Length: 157
Image 1 (cartoon, rainbow, N blue to C red):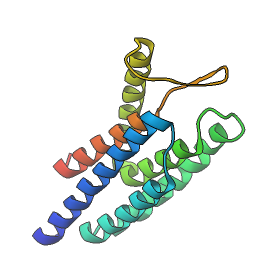
Image 2: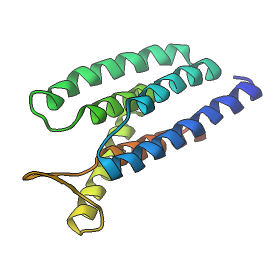
Image 3: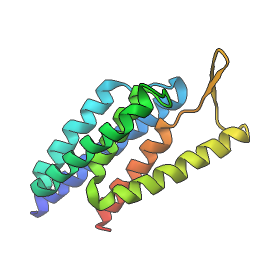
Image 4: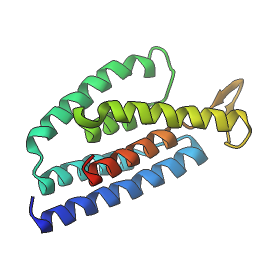
């Protein structure tokens, strides 16, 4: 990777992190994750791969994302444990993480989701009520976990 392509690849990570911050804010406010954000993150991944020259890793990342989507799909539809936006965000998270950062992404996501749950129990984080059901925005901690993966990728960890 040349100095110029490395600079632009890192710039793509910054833009993707900004989009993830927007995802987190919207998810906390409305419990939604827009498809436009997901599509933008996928396109930015393709651009990052092109600039960083990580073509071999990209195929493995894509396969991991597909496997993660297939594994997580029953928790979305039949069980109804989370919404489609979260399913797509997790899939994009595994696309960006790849096999190198997948375990770190899972651990960070669990930590940040646990912190969100704790903050909600303490009344410091808003929960959403629909009928008798109570919902917590888990898109925000997933987005923060992926931003942490970007930082790890950027620092070369």
